[in-house]
Length: 85
Image (cartoon, rainbow, N blue to C red):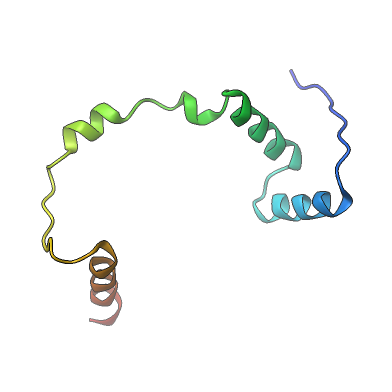
C-alpha cells in the first residue's frame, strides 16, 4: 500500500534529483523508496539468493592464462585483440 509523504528539501537538490530520475527512466518516488528500503534493510538486494555456494563451487575452475600480468594488462590485451586484430 502506498502512502503519500511530504518532504522539505532544498530546491536545487530536488531539481538535480529529478534530472537524475529522468536520465535513469525512474520516478523520484521510486528512487526515494528504494533508498529508504536500503536504509531499513528492506532492499531488493536482500531478496536475492545467496550465491556463496555457487561461488565456492566454481572457485579454482578457471586458471589464469598469464599470472604475471595484472587484470588491467589482461583487459587491455583482450580489448586490443577484439578491436584491433
